[in-house]
Image (cartoon, rainbow, N blue to C red):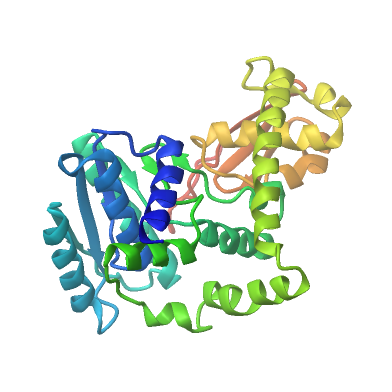
Amino acid sequence: MTAAVTDAVLARVRATGLLPDGGAVIVLLSGGQDSVCLLDVAVALAGRDAVRALHVEYGLRDEAAGDADHCAALCRRLEVPLDVEHARRPPESGNLQAWARDARYAAGALAAAASGARLAAGHTATDQVETILYRLATSPGRRALLGMPVRSGRLVRPLLGVTREETAAYCAARGLGWRTDATNETDRYARGRIRHGLVPALEAVDGRAAANVLNTAALLRDEAEVLGTVVETALAGRDHIAVDQLARLPVALARLVVRELAERAIGGRPCPRAAARLPELLELGDGALDVGDGARALVAGGVLRFGRTPPRPARGDTVDAA
C-alpha cells in the first residue's frame, strides 16, 4: 500500500511535465502537508541537485518559529538547500491573507528569476475546488470558474491533479511530518468557511460535487482557448476596433473583445469590469471612459482604443487651461 500511494502520486505529477529531470525548481515550503509532499516529489522527479526550498516567515503566528525549524529539519533530511525570507506586514496593508500571498509569491518570483528556475507551489485539486467556489461567490464572469492555471510564467502547480487527502497519505507513507496551521481549521477566513461549510454541504447533495467542479473548470478552460481564437479573429491583429463593427458582433463576443483590448492596454493584467461597460462604449461617441482597473477607453473617429488611465493630479496641483 505504501509503494502504491507514493507511486500513484509520482506518476501523476511526472505526467504533467512540470518537474522534469534536472530542471531547476524552487519549492515554496510552508511546512504544511501539501508543500512537504511537493518538496519530496520534486526531489524524486527533478533530482536533488536541481531543487531548492524557500520558506517565507511572516511573524504573524506564535508557531512561526516552529514552522521554520520544521522546514529546516526537513530540508536537512532531504539534503535540499533552504532559503528563509522574513516578511513583515506594513501598516494599512489591507487583507491579511492577500498580503501574505503577495509577499510569498514576490519573494519566490525574485528567487526564481535570479536563478532561472521554476517556482513550484503546492496547490492541490482540493485547493482548486475551494478557489473556484470562492471566485464564483465573489467574482462575476466565466473566468471565475477557470480556477488556478497549472503554469503561469515561471510559476507551476504540479499537484493540481492530487487531492489533499492524497498528499497526507503520501507524506505518511514516506514518514514525512508536517505542520498544521490552526487558522485553516477555523471559519475565521472565507477559505475556512468554504472548506468546512460549503464543500461538505455540496457533497451532501451529491458526493461527486468536488469532482464535478473540477471537470467543469477543465471544460471551461478548453472552451476558453476556442473563445480566445474567436476574439483574435475579430480583432485581426489590431489594437483597436471600429465601434460600428463592435456593435454588429454578438454581445458576448463584443464583451470579450472589449476586455481583451482593455487588458492589453494595461500590460495583460485582468480588467474584468471593462466588459460590463459595453453599452456605454457603444453610445460614447468621441470621448473617453474609464472602465476600471487602470484602463481608459478612447473613441475617436468611430474607432475604439484603450490606454492606461492617467494618474490623478496630486492634491494642490492645478491644471492649466488650454
